[in-house]
Length: 336
Ligand SMILES: Cc1cc2nc3c(=O)[nH]c(=O)nc-3n(C[C@H](O)[C@H](O)[C@H](O)COP(=O)(O)OP(=O)(O)OC[C@H]3O[C@@H](n4cnc5c(N)ncnc54)[C@H](O)[C@@H]3O)c2cc1C
Image (cartoon, rainbow, N blue to C red):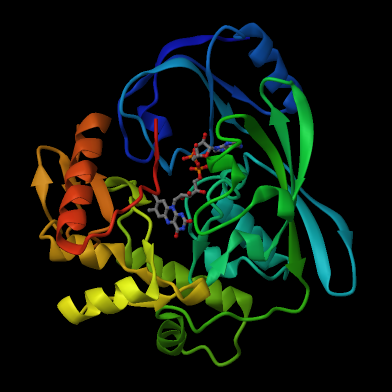
């Protein structure tokens, strides 16, 4: 068993932050995970996926265990659905492509989201009108302290907008081992959100298919979002805040251009990127920490920014949005 000490996490987070882990290992089964937990029982544990939704603000004084559990397996089928169990360490986008190749529908709108399958329930990933909980069936997770496997159903996970029980009362308590998805044999197409219809027209698509939708989403995302391989980032840094209908009306009187979408129970979801832009942050750069020139919601590391510098910039942004709009932004990225 190879032990990595004082290990640089720079290649393992899309923000390219050069934080060090006291100890680092990869595991590819529940048994291997348990061995490491026994070996490192005196240290705190952090379970890592693809590192695309985290910001290390300092070195990690415990053990970082990277989940590399693989495998995609059909569990069972009924007339309408196929139930697919997938290892937490599978790459999310490769899994989406695998489903499309097998004509299993439901996650095509979630194409090109970075990261691994195991993290997908953590923040209930979503894009272009679809969220993970639309296709979630169950998951298996290893309780790090009890050292045993639990099964979670949809109700157990308490999914919300970029939220689940794993970001709240069960934060850092479980390593997700596998996720089972309920995918459709006959697709229901979601094309009304964002610029999907426009892109499909541009592509000259006559017969709508999950493959065409996936390609449209890939095209839109590639043109809009900075590629972490080129400029280090973790996608949207903040969530879009949800406010009451009354608060929205108040804001609309003061800021007629405000961008908003209907939410549940009469509430309204505001575009955080627009508010950040109105505060003058778009394209701002201080040292190597910055706010992307095309996507104000995305904070970037131009080279050697520290996690603390990115975090401090996020704090300044948060405060200025609060001062101007009276709305408190919440970070989507996990701060470590
Ligand atoms: C360019 C870009 C675009 C993005 N676009 C979107 C988008 O459209 N929609 C969206 O929802 N997200 C988006 N994201 C955010 C990110 O891709 C997702 O949140 C993704 O699910 C994170 O996966 P990961 O494996 O990289 O998780 P990590 O960053 O490794 O981990 C995130 C959190 O989950 C925990 N975790 C990871 N794996 C496990 C596991 N197996 N068991 C227990 N805990 C675990 C970690 O401890 C950490 O707290 C984007 C990110 C980038 C860089």
